[in-house]
Each structure stands twice: as C-alpha cells, then as structure tokens.
Length: 390
Ligand code: GLA
Image (cartoon, rainbow, N blue to C red; front, side, top):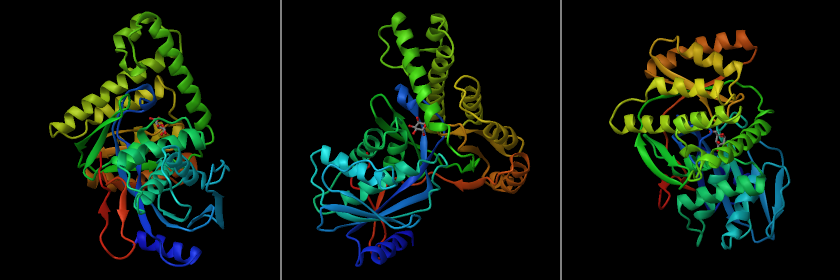
C-alpha cells in the first residue's frame, strides 16, 4: 500500500515506474539514553512507522528528489553535492558517503513517502537516510549490507548534514528485527537481537525541538570534559561508559561533569540488566525504565515538564509497568510499557489531561518491535529482506 503510494508519487513526478523501492522505520529507544556517543550500550526497537524511497537512474548530471509532504522537486549535483539546508540533504548526504566509499552510483530521480512524524524525536532523518541507502542498494551493482547502509547513513548525518549524533538511530533503522530489540555496543558497533514481544506506547509531547540541537552539543562537550578528568586518574578508560560508578564517585569531579558521567555509567549498566531480563524470557523491567528517566531528569538534565508529567501520569494507569523519555529529550517523545490493553485504554485520558495541562495535543501510538530496512516490491510482490541483516 505505502510502497504503491511511493511508486505513484514517483510516476506522477518523473513519469514511468521506479527501478527500486525500499523502506526503513523510525525508532524508539527502550533504554540506554545518551550512551551511544559515550561508547556505551543502547536498546532501541524499530516502530510501525516507515519512510519509503523509490529510485531510478535518470541519465543526468544531477539528482532530483520529490517528497509527498514537500512542494516542488529539489535537485543536487551528481559530483560533490553541497549542503543546501533543504530536506534532500539527507539524500545527498548518503550519495556523498557512497562516493566516499568508492561506490559509483548513477544520478537518480528519487521519490519519498513517509508516515514518520518529522521533528518528534523518532529519527525521521535516520529513516530517510537508511531508506535511501537501502533503495540504492537494490539497483544493479549496488549491493550493500544493512550494516554498511547504517554506517553510510550515520556518516551522512554527522559529516554532511552536520548533526553530531551517535550511531543508535541509523543502526536501529537499518538492523532492527521484528519481535526483537536491537542491543548495540556503541564502542565496537557490535549488535545482537534480543527477543522483545511487548507492546510499547509512544507519547509525543508535541513540544517544538528548537532547544534540542544546542543542548545536545553542550552535553557532548560536558561528557568529553568528564572523560578527560577521569583519565587523569584512570588512564586506561577507553570511553566514559567504561567508568564504573564507584570510580566516578571516588574521582570527585566538579559539576556538571560528575552528574553527566554517573548517568552515562549507570545507564549503560541498566541496559545490560534489561538485556539480561529479556534474554531470560522476562518482560522489560519497568523499574529500570523509571530509574533511567529519573537519571535523565536529575543527572543529565534533559527532561522537560511535559515528559515528567507523562511519566508520572502514565504510572498511575493500572497495568503500566514503566515509562521514560526516549531519544535526546528536551521535548520529543516518551514511552510506556505494560499490559497492551491497559496501554491502549490509558490513551484517551492521557490525551485529554495533557491538553488541559499544557494546551497542546499530544500524539499517541501503540507499537511493537518491527523490522528494520527492507526492499519493497515495485509491483504487488511481497517485500523481501535485505541481503545480510547484520
Ligand atoms: C539522539 C541522537 C542519538 C542518541 C540520542 C540520545 O536521538 O541522535 O544518537 O545520542 O539522542 O540517546
């Protein structure tokens, strides 16, 4: 259905059928926040919202890109594309990374269709980057592993678009698997798939993300400072997540370095506990999610009144086991886990009370762990998995 909508957009914009279509999902992180760029561990799932990308070589010396939600057709040069500040930078960035990796990709026409809300903290940009990489991998001679697609997408975000994110979002979008969470060791980029059948409620606070980018960069700098201070005492530390909580306490760092470091260290250890529970067939421990939120609020200072409200209010609903902010914070989304019917039943009240408290309409979705990037049929054939998932 959605691949068909993308094919239709392609046909209406450029004429004829696309040569390949692929899709990639948005993500929520179950636990492990602000650990990825500190060499720690994360545990995201792909969600039931995807971005579809249709491509076909156009025989020109420029790429053309159209989106179902944007006016007009964008374009960028086939050789050394420049950043434009426009949405198609995510396409150009991936093309640029493929060229840097020595791949010869013919200039293409590109059509994008998505039901991932932009700017909500669900990684709409990663979904687009990964879907572009996955679609180009379907062209003759374009074969690329899902892991390489994740790497291209991440470098596109950091080097071309210029956002200093960690690897979590692009890895989740490219490598996630239905019914599983993706455990990523961000120091080595090793991954494993951990069974995760629970439903997850996603609550978008609908708070604009204006502050997020600058606050994110400040936190990164604070973490680097904390690591430098810790290394004066423990030179063997390869990254901040490696520091044990006791080491951080003993080092008596100045604030805010001490709080930031303690969050990163303890949050990584919470990921390990969550993974252990899931592997042994236990459900995701709501207490770990609450401890994570509390740490993000007090030690990392990246929560907001809206996110705190949601966690507190969600925990009063019967059958809800745990809740926390997800993603960078400072607005964006939170999640809750628990009995699926209870989660669904809590939504209307949450919506009504949130609107009363903050004067904003939240968006609420129920999801399960979905598949990562995949090739889509250009006709009515069923979708295929990408060649090598990990
Ligand atoms: C953003 C970044 C991720 C990660 C999270 C916080 O979503 O893109 O790489 O750092 O924030 O966990």
